[in-house]
Image (tube, rainbow, N blue to C red; front, side, top):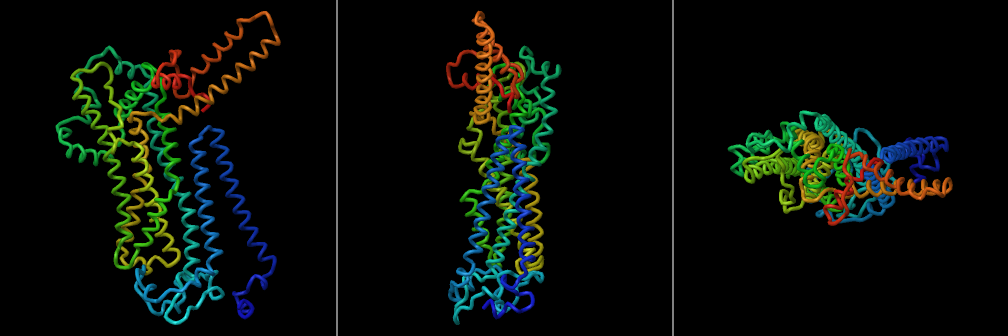
Length: 503
């Protein structure tokens, strides 16, 4: 088969192709692969050098997903010949088509802007009368291109999500710096008494409409689009977090903690779990001509993101209402009550999984649109209702921006209002600090033993000096020596006070 068609112009097999042409193509592919691998490697080294373990783990997860997509591509390449030889009845092949049925489609060249497929005549298989291929060689090649689109857009959307989220938290840096000013210390003076309804936080969130649950959620829905996190909200939630988890008066860099928390959330968001793959297959399965399901599927991420944003804003408003219910007069800044009961089913992590689903589903649908545009054209049978297509793409862009710039940073902040703090951030950094401190103490002890044998008290002095150095940390700028560990909460406050200078 290959010999009979090998002499045709443009259809030469590999045995009739000049070696220099084969080497040139292979060299370009190899160089591109090495460059990509080098970029990812240096990016990982940069994350490691900056001690951004969460981002490094996210990068490793992206590499893992790319490897999975590469393996899928390899399987398609190897099994294409055998899959195209599986024949099914024409009646079954004519059901649930994405485009209107055309009896001449089997003999027509696919409309792919003049591109010639690698899987043309040499691998196409002709079934007996009344039967057709399960998936033709041309269709498998188009799926191969789709896998490539998935890989490229997965990396692109992951980078966009993290960039917008970090840009949002950068705004909070100024508010964190204000906590060191004299004005902030005066406003949060513990000896200062105020009526509860006179505080800025309560005044913004607790009013006549907050007495009705329906009106509270309506106001929360609109608030997420206009200054979703205000300065008063940030400072009040910060004060409540420190009061619940740290020692009173601790100088804690809450913004850096939120930044680390956002990076930890990003590590979850970039993954592709089996349920997400199942949702992607469902989108492809129900993309049937006349059903317009792609448009309705595109509304799911939008509804999920809007519901999450409304819920997070309602949590803030509800905490303000609870302050008015508990106190008429407050001392210092209002203290919000931290509890998992604020979240759906008492599970704060559930909100992050919903954000993950919405981001993946939205990215998949946008990828699907661009792949159809590339393979079949913008005005193909897939896009008969062009108005729906434009609306779907616009919805996708809105969802990506709202989720990355508003919802995900808002979740990183409000999720700290649960009963538990993110221990993974503290555990890892505390362990590093203690390990480095221990090595320094042992090293100095050996040096002192060699230099002098008549100063037995110097070792204890060195230990005290090294321990005091650990109190200067990245999150906790200055804190008193913690008391002996007695219970679970005291142990965590002690870990926070030890510090994370090596972060």
